Image: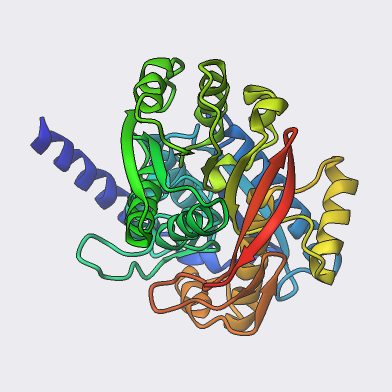
Length: 387
């Protein structure tokens, strides 16, 4: 079974590389440059993909209104990865070999990005994930940098560390429990780095329980954790399950501060958890729509005008990813995918709505983090943490 799967993957990559090598005209002679969006349009994390798509289209509209990139208009081709890693690989293959995009934005989920990088790497086509925070998104198991994979966000070690410091230093908690999505590289990474930093500071992790994506009943696990008398609950998952966990925890009388990572950032969270249950809850993120920079104010106003809603972090980072591709194509003076990737690695002096971006040797931007506090379901800026 395992050998059959390996052969299948090799055959897929061979066919894909053959198809990609026959796309020599990708740099394009038409008046349109196609970028792909490998996004979560359906499934458990659909709000991430919808926010990203909105922001990419907004960025492209603004760029095209100013004359486009190198005299050509940008257009977006979206492939729905259904919030699943396998589908993300299929979506990446479609975008590159069939739609012949010159670069791809997405996916947002780390597991999906890690799975699909085999395809974008084999095709030598640059991919920027707005929110894939796991270290293995841009580095393989041997520690070698993937030359065609970039991210617009910080990485899990920093995000997990930030929340551990906030919990210990600001909330003054000393005994933490953790609920971990065992089907998510993102969640496992955050949990690992939170635990490491929290214990290093002198705190104690008194209990850990696992769940899987699409689970709906968490009361047995929460009952076990509550019995350990923690004064803090860390839930580094995605909003769909997090909302249910928070709601069920409160129903059990598990009334301690709760926190997570940027996977909480969705308007759907309050609908699932209910606003009152989210008081005394926090999450780490890279972006707040309340940031008072001129660029961000203009972005928020334009986004609200277009979509009648405030942008979330997925929108902000997808917007920045689009601008990064535009800059790379301008710097390269080309739409050749290999030259775009080379230009991305050299980007300097770029500032997006989420702050300045310059990639380090592992294609990770060095960025600050913010702590968002939820009050009656609404996001409020609490503090900023520098790297």
